[in-house]
Length: 155
Length: 242
Image (cartoon, rainbow over all chains, first blue to last red; front, side, top):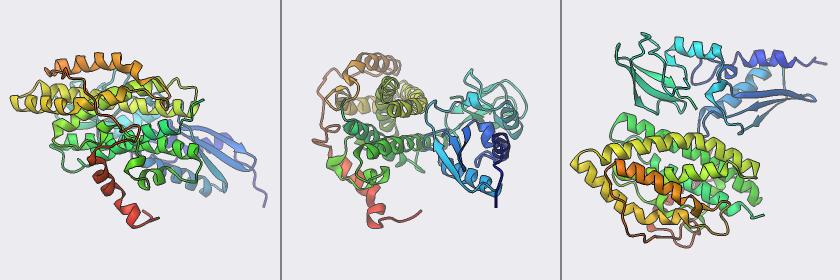
């Protein structure tokens, strides 16, 4: 059977439908960790950069990418790890940031802390800890509605 | 050009040994937030270990991988600083050890970012982002506990007195070092004076230094016990799958 190669744009679209395993409201493309997609003859090479070096989700992410592309009929997939330039939250898509906020996770701000409480939108917030439930998050609290919330750390 | 293997083992073993030490707190830290922070710090360090020891294994080219280097070498083959193998003792002591290491680590990684070995530069660039967070937290905690209650002050000063003799080794440059670590001392001195001063702690004036960790000549007795625990599973059940 001769299969026509899906276009690179088509592959990006498929990858944009693969959810982040820890924060399923955003896609791997939203997260900014897919750094490149290219055909090497009949092999599709996907370049991925880790968020945090020890993040246990990395292995699941690689598996999810392969599975999704296999499901779309691409049988030969190779993943390339790229460390430099190191992942930065600047690569989060605007769409992804909006989804995070709706989900209850304050998106990263260059100022170093959340702009507002994702629930009540008050700007009166304080840091509980720089570390949270996953390596990419910190714990903050709203001093108006008193709810604790996750903040996606800016790195 | 210097063979980078020994230096890569030093970087990897530092993060491996400290990462394991810090992970010993998982589930037993004083409060939940600190437990999470310690576990996250340990996770970052173990992630960095995979990068450093992975590259070391490639350099060595003897068919070993990062896991083989971590789990199938014995004490005399480890090249970590003596500071990181010191036991946790109390929470304050753990955070003092973390602060002294983070201060050194951040300077070393910043210098390695401009290494002409692109793989080393990439690992340093990645790690530095994480270590910047570690340093911010350990500095804040050392200040809070040093300038805290009478009891916490006393414990932090005792930790500093106990750990200071392990600081000197971090700044002894030899032929295996890819950067001149001794040249980083003035920046370390400035940083530690600033943080420890704010923490109302006094830096010991005696500059006696223990050495032998990074060269592998003489580790302290604590490393063997730690490695025995860390390596038990893969040694008792070789090739066990998760």
